[in-house]
Structure formats: structure tokens, C-alpha cells
Length: 145
Image (cartoon, rainbow, N blue to C red; front, side, top):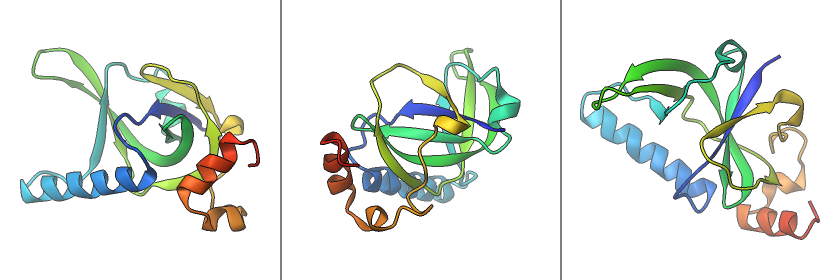
């Protein structure tokens, strides 16, 4: 069974913001002749890497709610320009919206068990999947979702 990661998406106000940032970043990499892959660099590598790579995703917290996920494709150990060991999380650039769920602020990333991960909006969410993100967020904050 896979294990997932969860992380705050700092700077994004919405899923659309994040999608636009991913598109821009990939275009810049292509223009520079670099591999067009989305990579998120962190200070520490997951000790449960095999479980993460067994179908795990990185769930993004946007404005206090788990809002979207991206499938983890690879985990790479690197050394940055200052000689510090880092972990690159290589992600599928496609964002999958999930049922919004509140999440408190935290630093770094955390593990998220598969049975605790929110459902994808496309997985039988019905009318909820058709709602604008802001409306889903408000309804969730009111306890109606």
C-alpha cells in the first residue's frame, strides 16, 4: 500500500495559481534546453521512499485546506550549490483536485497514510466536482462538505 506526502503550497492562492506556475516553470525549462519535469526540492528525503514510490502522491495544502495532489514519479538525492544534501521530489505535472479538507500549518512535509488521503474530486464526487474551488472551500469551512 502506498504512503503519500503532504506539504504546504506556499505562495499559491488557488489550484489555478499552482497550475499556472507549473505551466510557466515547465515552459521556462524547455526554453532553456533543460528537461521539462517538475521537481520540488526539500531538505530531507523520505525514509519510506519505497512506499512513496509505490503509487504515492504529494498532497498540497492551499490556504489551509488539502486541495490537490500530484503523483510522485521519483525521489533523487542531490547536493546543492552550497554542498548541502537535498532531496528532489519529481512530480507528474498534472494536478488532481481532491475533496477539500482542513489542514493546520506545519513545516516541511509529512507522511499521509493512504486510508487518510482525501478522495479525488473525479472519483464519484458528483456536483462537488463541478463547483468552483472558492465555493468548495467556503462550504468546507462552514462544515457543509
